[in-house]
Image 1 (cartoon, helix red, strand yellow):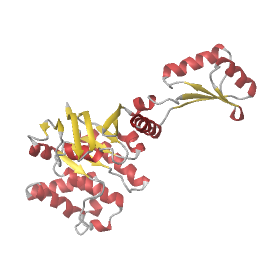
Image 2 (spheres, rainbow, N blue to C red):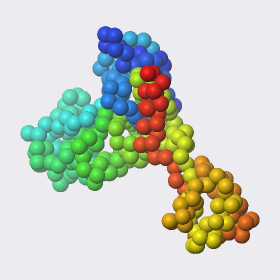
Image 3 (tube, rainbow, N blue to C red):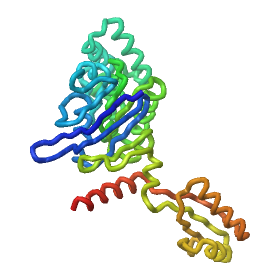
Image 4 (cartoon, rainbow, N blue to C red):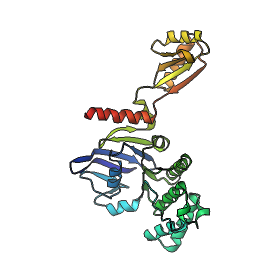
Length: 311
């Protein structure tokens, strides 16, 4: 089933085009990451899909509902968590959750049950009676996510969810997000500028630039689009290095480290072919490592290419 489906979304502010016809198809119970530089249109996309603003053109369905004609149904199906935790520092963790239960018109008993369940899921039971103002950034973010879940949404929009968090807190949030997908079957629409975050969390990634999606796929698929993948071979001595260099004439030598850099995509078939050639030449490598571009390389290459194309 498709959780989010959009076709030809366009949005302009005056003469500035923010979205220039984007298409999305996001399956249920998955994490989809939308990457892009500042001003690329990420937040505008979230605002349209969460019914906060309307598109100038195109159509979208979220949770099976049309975002224009069935906006109330969309809102009942989703949760939205912004860049900064929207918790009330004067209230305790439990009170924040109960406030959300009241806003969702839950009965007193049901509200308390959900609050207790969420405090336990997010490991906040011991902090339930403490004011949120005393919480660390990571704890506030955990509480913010818990508050989003009070209404039991099937789709959650996370806009820059770990902005300002330390590395340990960021990883805690990542674990919680994956748990929402794996344990509860929730669909996550993630916008982030932390490329490692997208790499760790997302089942599929789209790169938005200049109002258009310039690339989409899994992290590994995107990395393979960028040149620079290679297999690095290290040898025990210079004699073996020279022998291997004769086998791989296009390889780049690193005499200081007794290594060769062989162009290749790093797939099992390519690695096997390299090893077969070494064996046929009776040359033994001391180590073999595969190097591929990371998402930083992908992001910079794609956005720079698009920038150059528009000049």
